[in-house]
Amino acid sequence: MYTPEQFWNWFKDNNKAYTFLDSVDNVVKDKLLDEFEEKLHAYCDKLFFEMGGLPDEDQELIITAEGNSDYFDKVEELINVAPQIDRWQFTALKPAIPGHFKSTWGNIQLDTNDLWFLPLNSKKPQGIAIRIYIKNHDLIKDDKHLTQLVWKMLDTILGEKSMAYDINYFDTDLQPDDPEAEDMYPILELPDYIRWVKSKTQQSSS
Image (cartoon, rainbow, N blue to C red):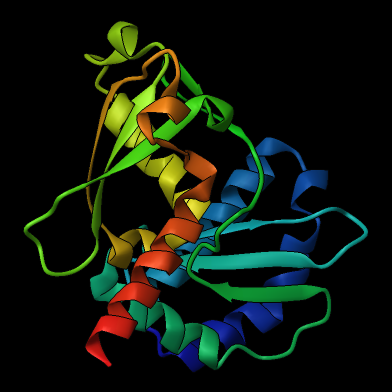
């Protein structure tokens, strides 16, 4: 097993090979990524990573627990002792990414422009429950990848920590012809809605 310091000592010695990942052939790239995962898993085998950046800019390394809040502390422990390394930025947990996007999983592609949500009543004490309305829901509702794709998109919209702590339930349904008339919200307004719910909760408890 690696300590955080041992992991970073390894990365300090080898980081230059990862600065130009997109410039090497796929065989070399796969070998480098496999080695990185091996070293990361020597620290904690429940953690994963995303790595990349434009060639002339700093590279970003994101350490993620893939939404498993039981290991958020392991991610933060590792990033908190990250050294300063030229051309690298280190991030604990996947951040929220603003703006519209499309996402694909299997044979399904969803566009944030076409997704709306409605809060649901929840008996759970923490987090919120939502229903997500999709235009072509009838055509894809039985696809095994649908729930995974929606989870992935929420993770991108909210960031890993908010997705884990602020959403306790979601499901999907067919979108009506005029979702705004049904008091639904565009999916990209979900972070603002969560902040509003939290502010109301804080006000009521003070």
